[in-house]
Image (cartoon, rainbow, N blue to C red; front, side, top):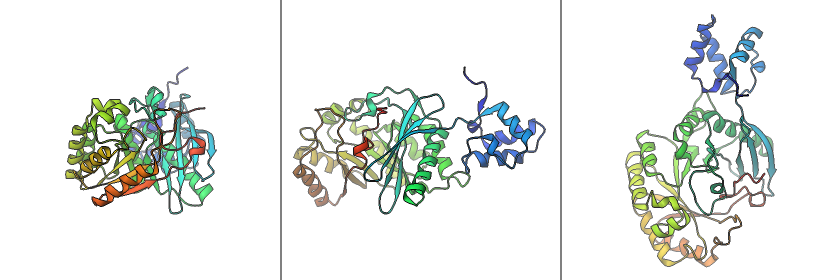
Length: 346
């Protein structure tokens, strides 16, 4: 039976203060509860020790804390941790802790499943069931920060929205979550350490620029030729490269922040000189860098890792044109935690 109680974390601090005043208490109680909920990330009213028993009971009678639960945890040989995250309604998403010598990064999900249809991504095989709420996104970061401290003896340093779902199709909730993550009343992380990765929704990229967001932008590009991109990312027929390019030029004009292009090279799909030349041209529109990403198999024979020589041709052509390029070796492959592999196999 669905609970008639309200999710307390859907309330603003002002609404919490108003609730206490309406119930004959003082407004500052709302501040206390807000701190327990967010900066201390408590999941139970009973643990709010500076509140009286009567106050805790009143909260229990009126509200629920719809917190996530780390339902399963897999550890990779390279230290990567993949979490199966159970939500309050029983649905499951996945999140990943990616450690390196200098940093630990949380890869978080924004939707249950995905509404886009990229053929090389395991998540795309799941239909989109719903958007995550801001607190569900926030909770993933809190859980991964705890794991980072426990297993790697350092606090979480970076966040990437590269898990399940298209973040720009859950725009408001993702931005509310980032506001909480970067707020002094939340986790107090720097927005410069957060990267939102999108498959490219031009209208929403422009909206981000208008909203003057402070985090970084990455685009899953994978081809700068429309026919090729549409063949592997069918939604490209709705949001073609010309529209994407225009939105990125708008982004740069407004924010003056360079964009990262994520790019997987596949044998027989985008490994020719024509593909390289198109990418070089696309990179000249605004300041950017390219991450060439190792392909992680999802058991589809259409997609095969490109040859080392094809990767090297990309690198040399990009560098010749003064475009910054990094090769990203994937981590967590042995537990299906690498880029494009998140699909709730459990």
